[in-house]
Image (cartoon, rainbow, N blue to C red):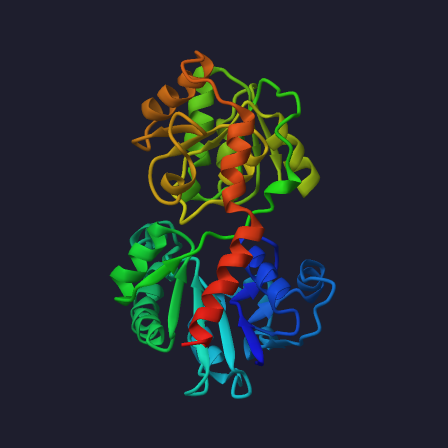
Length: 365
């Protein structure tokens, strides 16, 4: 079988790209179809036995595409449909933007691994719009309406959906009226050790964007006067710099060895946002750190309250502080080996085994 893997954009290595890397480990001769990418970043992430080709849509040839790719979102549905997939028998699309809308042969099998329906046109539309500039607020309602229509219709081109969590499967059912198998994304849990001596600081790790609520973590630790390290960059950087007290260290973006070191030494990970799945909490547990997480979204499927972390029910200062104090007052004691064992159930080996079994079951129908 000739295999194509379709992704939206690949300019850094995050959760969606980790899924693609694992798919290429299963299908190293597959070809990659993508709107825009940094080929150096992509080739470093791909397995050494990759023999496929990289095909980019016309988006990649537009001015400033690598830096301003999101501004070309209205053109991506058209660009997806121009990708020629007629020679491919199996198409695996990695979707949280316009990737699944490719046109395939009638006898080809199209399986979509959905990280999320497009948040900015569905459930987070009004939140996105309220934080946008004047021009975006004026134009985007018209663009979003068209994107919703296309996104919903393009879902019918997919033969089988896989969701990265039950939370996302429910949204696929709501917005696309389709059922989805749940296969959790791959996490390289064996890269972490839970046996490193722990420090006295807590860690907040991830993009500094509004919905991840790093500002809530900073506010809580200002009040508690406990040490907090924040690793990441984004639109909230300036605000957090202004907010942060002397007990809070803002480190900006860091390479993986630094992130790994902090995950293995932190007293706990603070995860105050709502995520579709959330790879960072699994990495923290693999490193032996309990997770303090908002009890919504993917955290409900990865963090076991009282066993591998603490879940707080409301996205408020009081609720988060109450959860942190359970660790500080040693109301709950966490066994690093138990955390590591739980994290291992989300390992990349598990993902690859489940994906391969799913694909084979659909091919053999």
